[in-house]
View 1 (cartoon, rainbow, N blue to C red):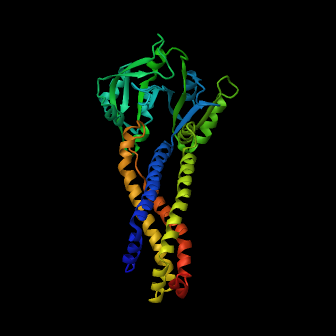
View 2: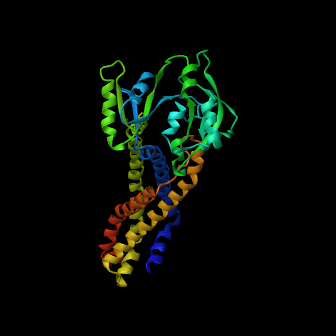
Length: 386
């Protein structure tokens, strides 16, 4: 710790250069924090999926619709506790930028198998008794300033009404929260009654997008999934049944491999940063060769000189990383407010430790070459200016 003032003074020798380099590193870690928060939000849905729920879709694609009768057959199987038909609605509110998840579901069966969704009893009953009723997540209600009793017009993206209109008008009868506040972003959605949706849509009546099944024994998930698919094998509407976790992961892959995309972006950013920071450190040591020679003359050992230069690189990267992560923490709430469905974006503890680990590695890679040069300095040649 007694060498800290010396390291700090070295960083302050060329303040504009140090500040600009630090800002470049901070921006890289700002990007790291934001992208990892988005990646975590996408993957968290799979992580919290119920172990006692299965999802049955068309065998070849999630867009392959299934007959409504499939649900009745699944419901009659041993080991099945409940089944709910579900369908993607795919609309938006007022403007296409106001997009969030909307599902048409068999309301009573669906809510019974999702204890994560907390809805006041009177609002739940209103949902069960109002054909045009919908319930929405608390975060969405707050974002759009909705309140109970509002009529919500939704522009259809896939399903026009049978009269040809593309505007569905729903009655907001309930606002739900989640049992665990950390799960709010994963349930940021609107639930529509399936019976009204199926009756009012223009085509594909009597079908569902997928079926969610609650099983009595999670240990039998694999066996029951195979039995469901075997029931519809060689039929015109074959199925594929997965655990809810596997289904959620597959659903997110429809958007692409988010993790790979983010890793590629960050890899390119930090690879470029290596050259920028490495050049700065080499130039800094080159300018201070006589000073380093004086330190050696005063009795500073070669390993100590090596440690001082590495410490300089480490201090720069760590401070910049912390600044970048702090900026990401400040920016993320504002970003989330413009992304319905991704509220609650936050930097995870794993991301923080990952960022600090990257900062240490970056410091070692860019600091080691100039540190080795400083350690190997010949005092006479350095003071002579050779």
